[in-house]
Image (cartoon, rainbow, N blue to C red; front, top):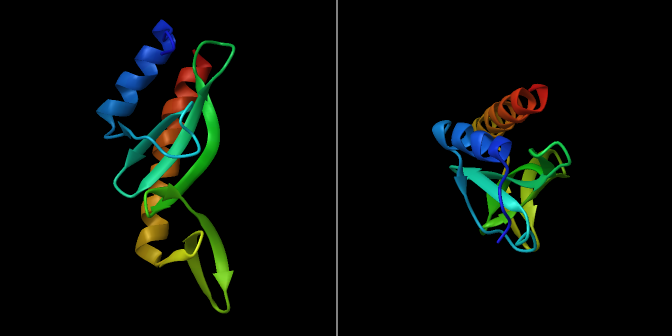
Length: 111
């Protein structure tokens, strides 16, 4: 178990207040993974005592971070042999998740 810095604790409090929750995602067991709804990202500690993105925000497919790819004329979120349509609503939710996460991490880095 890692010991958290005061800055990391403050960042986690802001993440929790914004609806983010911790989640375990293989192969990121040593990272701090957070999710909100069906979106997630992996965070890692940095030298200034806070967090940065280790893996970018992604939609969860079968509980794993997916990759967005084109399949012909459509876009899908893929994890191994499972895929989920990248609908406009899912893309909007993912972008909102990414922006909210970035805003919290950027504010913390500016301190």
